[in-house]
Image (cartoon, rainbow, N blue to C red; front, side, top):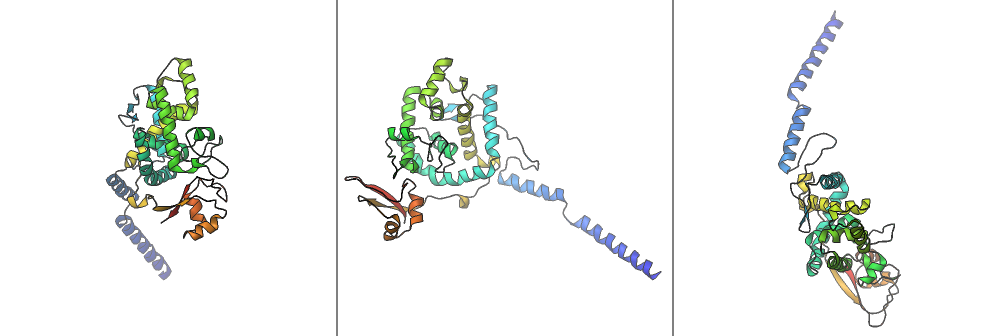
Length: 310
């Protein structure tokens, strides 16, 4: 009898605690409601808990001052595809924002000097993710410049020096290319497409199809996506919270303060050179990716500027 009483007492206690926990502990739905409220306050477009959502398209889309004809069905779908893809490349797009804060303010004055529309600052974001990458076709650097094109635009490219890896000198070379392309096409959207397809390749497509608008041309998959990728990245970069990207100022990478050492004599040992200038080999290579060998041969009358941290 006593054993039965004890079991009954324990059962009542368990039920009582269960009831209290159920009535007092916030339900999952309440937590979700609070998170939805918090995210909405932060400006997130849609904080629902589904695995993926389709973001609404902006009413107006433009690139380099030229409207994208969103009323054309295939144009709308092609932009939609690039927007959704980049919205869900979460870590990649976040790091684009971080790097862009460091580099775009340095690139913009160069674009301005050549009268290149501001939107072209997004081109190296889709070309290289703002990294000194090398493509399977041996295009290198932030602007993914081929060796012949780089030399044509005034860059030094040797076994020891490759200025395609210098983000700012490469920006200037790219501006020269874009200026040349605009003098040919007189349309900035076609200029952007030509950066991917090449001037002569794009001109062949224009001549063969008798069309002079990018949006009316039938092109290879990479080039047909190119302008839409640019427009999509521009849209996300300019309205990050609309597409679910919340990033604080403190999260962004800042321009590093550098000093420059002018060099007019051959450097045979970069380690010794870096140490003699109050730095180290790692930092020398980090800030001068255009130095491609373990030495620098300086010809008579030539001067190089080597960047080191202040």
